[in-house]
Image (cartoon, rainbow over all chains, first blue to last red; front, top):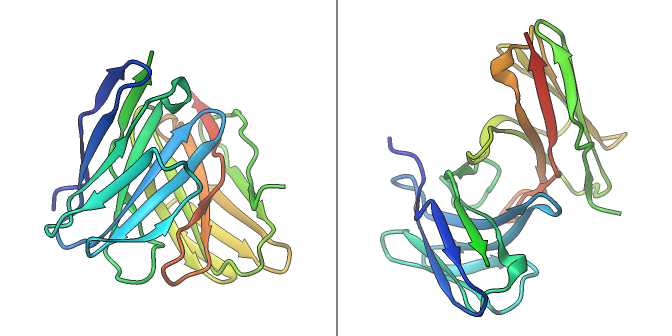
Length: 114
Length: 111
């Protein structure tokens, strides 16, 4: 089975721009979560989608948004980029409808904001 | 105080050593405990997953949970240079709750 895939792998943007990141979960997984990872803050939860609905949300500003499509693929969008948004953005999918313990991560998208 | 505390290291050990990685937590509602391994420039990979207290063994890896002390450990026996990575602990209340991650401990196993 193919793992979680994320595109693009690397991205350079400038302040004020917006960016869209894409995630394809493992086939059959309906839950997709997004995380931001930085050296200073570690892994921070952004949001989780299940069956096209946002089910959980972390403490990030409204500039961070996401959506999930009927095939479970997910996108996240960051508008009005700030320097502090530079990070590794990770997507994780889970096979369980309810329990999130077995999450499988993609390789991440490394975003650099200049 | 963060819900999950993990020493960032780095922890440097010689090849063949027994490695002990630990996390403490403050939320007694956590029931599920996970360990992830993350190589440089890769996403985290789920290593071990345990429910409630006790031990779980998988090859060279043993996960231990002590809920009374709010303390979890990952032991790596006969450590190899290929074990060099960052190890993140994570824990969850179960259900649709999203896991809470530690900051990760950097492990270096030198030949």
